[in-house]
Image (cartoon, rainbow, N blue to C red; front, side, top):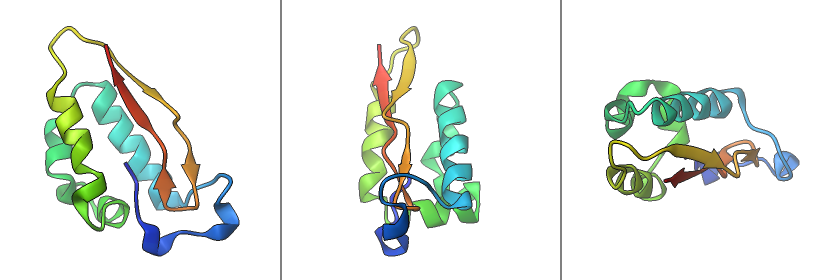
Length: 96
């Protein structure tokens, strides 16, 4: 969800994230797990952290398609939830 290659830190390549990256990642995860997907569509309105996390949307848009496939009664869970390189998260979404 957080994908800013321009701000990547090789010192954190094996783990760790900038404060802004961790904050917006937590926000994204809360919205996903609570089924509140509308704010995710307008991520630009979620603040400066979101704009840093998603400087261009091509790596973010697949999340929108994935969440759009979820039916009302399907469970959502996260896996591979870790930050690396300061400005990247590897968080993945599982539906069902």
